Image 1 (cartoon, rainbow, N blue to C red):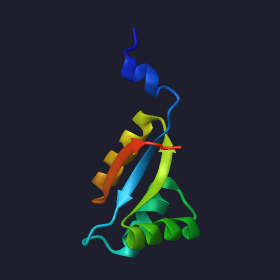
Image 2 (tube, one colour):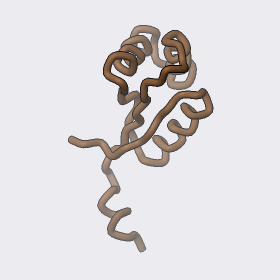
Image 3 (cartoon, rainbow, N blue to C red):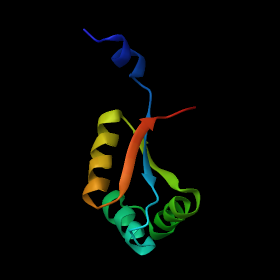
Image 4 (cartoon, rainbow, N blue to C red):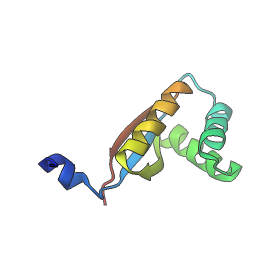
Length: 88
């Protein structure tokens, strides 16, 4: 039996947010986005610039479990990442 929290979150997409930090170089962040997500260079650079200028960027969306795996992978690469429910 599913609890209310689980039932209400079914079908609700989650997002992966990568946050700016003073440690990682911009070209390294592009490398991570290209290597891990398979983004083309232009998309990886666009996302990196959002992180750099806005302080954060949503780099992926999908089921919670998938976003948790992505967040852990970003942590393994040394990036700061969190997940959140997508707000329409």
